[in-house]
Image 1: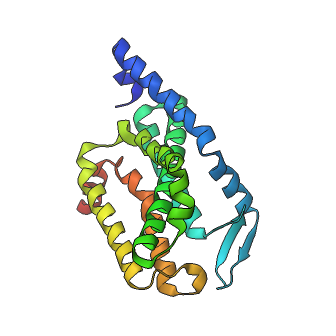
Image 2: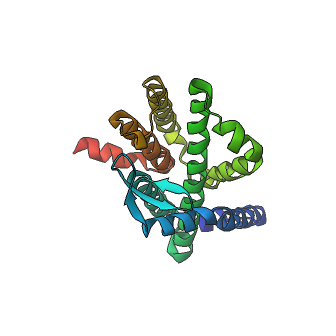
Length: 218
């Protein structure tokens, strides 16, 4: 059910107006991500391990990061648009997807450096994240943009996928927590898997379970 169908009372309208203002506020918050990705796509290269990377503003972005983020964004945009309807619904879908992907990227970085801190003594958490924790939490909080669209029956699959992602982090940590730049295949695969899951998991919360049942019947 989309926003137009839900706006049956003045209270509903006010809530949705607040929600629209909230997702609009994500535009400047995540502008750095937009700029960095666009610049990086124009600057492909290879790192010391021979892996393809896209570089911009001191960041190296791997193809799987861009591909999974794009896939997650497209899925969320379509799923929100299908429920909201019309051009307005499409714009809402784009804003929701962008805010959600941005927040999940920030959450991934926090999770990544936290595992490095607790299991391998990395100082990145203390030196870069904790001094700006309020800003990081603000960005992570935009995952709430997805709240009006999440289907209750999908909570279980979200829980399972989250547990799988954390398990992969533990496996990665137990096997040395090596980065793709080291040339370690396991490190590359586990980095790609965890990154991809972080980008796609939110979309799973919007899926209609009947899609999966139809696939099973076939």
